[in-house]
Length: 383
Image (cartoon, rainbow, N blue to C red; front, side, top):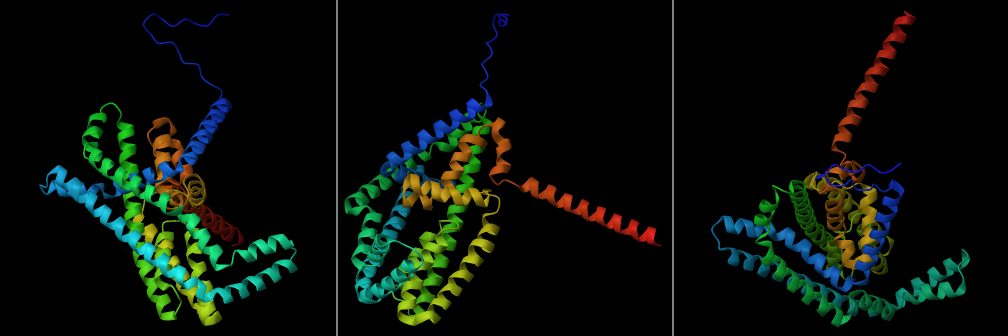
């Protein structure tokens, strides 16, 4: 039997791939893309970070233009403001790291004692001698400084990173002045894509703005509390707390470890208890109560995807990937789901469960009504 030939003037029907083949091709393409981004993470990391910053500050430029400021002046003002913020942040970071480098040698003997105690415990629970030796060596102050140096990627790598970020910010800010007109131009032919871009930009801006504001408050509060407790390097740990506020679920545990260690060295277990209480209360209040209420429906990612996205983007882009993991996940959802009307049914599976919550509330009300009816019926039969 031969295939049906379409009438003249009508396009031929496209062959439909089996679902399994489509899934495997999609997974293969995603794997190749992930490995590609990881291979050029020294470039893709700062470029994507610049994209997030550009989206975040875009409303400032638009507001200036609405007040009659020329487009070029508004764009330049936003660029200068972002550059100033980055310069201030990295200045504070280098000052804090300098304090940390001078702080470590003061507690070298105490760290070695802790390492010896930890090594003894590990040997008793079955760790091998070589494993214990490697772990104990990690408590050496010089080894910790080497780890931090590798984390930063050296002076040359850091300079390249900064130059890439600043240059990309400058170019994206200039190109971004044409974006509203481009979106209006595309809306008649690509309305779903334009809506998806708007949803993505709104989510990124709200998430970054709220997280930055709450992170500053959280970092300052932790700094003051640690200074009152007499924990060495309080300013550094406050800055670390601010950075880790951008890392959902995991950031809290990263930020609390150094204050616990140094607090225990100078103040004993009482200081450790106070550090745990202060960090626990602040984290619970900010990330579990305040942030969800302010961010609202802008992100709509479930907890599992949020946690896995931090691990995934940290592997792909390095430390900066953990900080911008949520915006990057929103970008992927925008490209694969929000911009395709046929794929929007995936949104509830990624965390957009507003309608699902309504259904659950209705089902709960219905179940309560049914239980009440059964209870009343049972009482009527007893009577």
